Image 1 (cartoon, helix red, strand yellow):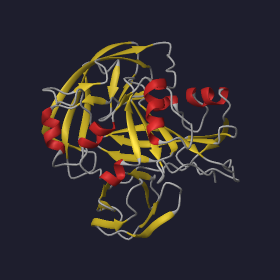
Image 2: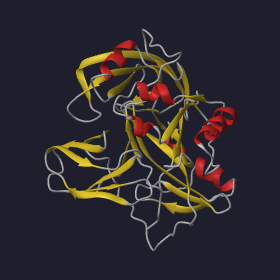
Image 3: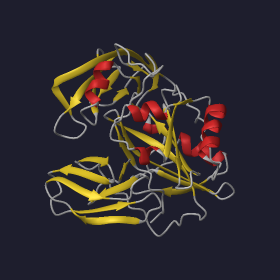
Image 4: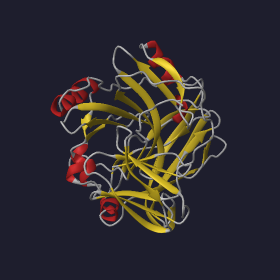
Length: 354
């Protein structure tokens, strides 16, 4: 099996405000989007209204549901939409409270609606991959300066954390968040070890087609042109690459943001080239039917779907920090404070919890 970074789904209801103040209405990363035909998209909310901020003081997440006035141009699937032919559609992102089922809307409790417009373009347009630092070992202050100066990003960490009450001060010390202003790649992350040194950086991807699925893709082709070697694909069909001169491994995964399953691209310090092994498991790994939260030195898993099934929790180096079996209801498992952890339940895709 291929070795890969354990940067998986980030279970955060990500929020942001501009100017440090909430607005009367939430605002998307843009109000008009040009999208490629047959590609599935998600949309990041860059500013939350006071209504959403108040809701998140008592609840861990929001959920979203897209609607369209022209399903022959843009089709919707709950928390995603896809262009099906050239044209323009008026869209709405409806924001709901979360139901008892993780990431599923409570349709009786709509919090807000945000209108926007989608134009489906042809032929497809490429979206250049944004800047992400791989200067491994640089101190946090240097990494921040690097990302802001060379990426042209807005440092987003304090506001991101302020609006996400499940993140502790210890956990906050392990990462920074940056707002890019790009609907295709709206957020970037930098991750630090216990010495405050950079060891990983991630880019959030709104259009998963750019990453591909068990095939070469726009992003893999670009990285190969930059000196990375495409080694193969992980258990979810997502790319794994390595650059020996940069001591950098690249992998991808799923990340839950604002009730939507974005993908992300992760660059991580790795001194050894991952082995390719004899085979690749091409079995689809679904995201677990569970609510997973990180709270004060513990991981809470709320589920009624995996009684008696195994659970393994890893630190970011891949070391097992907890292992056991689940019961119905709330499972509380102690884990080391500070760094994010990776939760893997039974045969499901791994989930990153911060």
